[in-house]
Length: 176
Image 1 (spheres, rainbow, N blue to C red):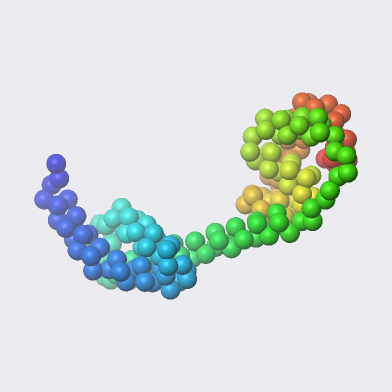
Image 2: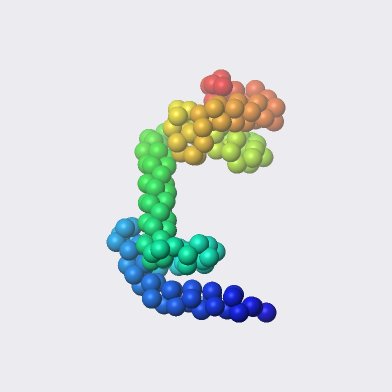
């Protein structure tokens, strides 16, 4: 059961929601250029505002506070989209290389061994060796540090060599 204070806060928030939701969605649309995402951003911002409602309702300008939350969320969404486009460009920008007569059993063995690696190790090994990305580009793609790429690649290759023996070294040309 709610208290009178909780009920009053909920009523205030409901009124705030009704008065400002459309404005916040319009702001999100103008900032991101994504009509479909604008409603989601406004709703997410209002959820965040509800969680901090005591702080918002005490602010001198609660609507300005709400617009700031929407702007920050829109900025984060845009940055995420830019990072995702960079990742896609890195993956798809690589030339496809064909192999005349692949060693199918070896490929199957390597794929199975790769599946046993935790995701980050597997991603580092694949990006460094199969896609021939630099440590820096691998770090950028995965959103991790270059040092993490180095350690995860090294550990991943060690695990692959333990699982596959000499086959792992032959397939990646002995690169570590």
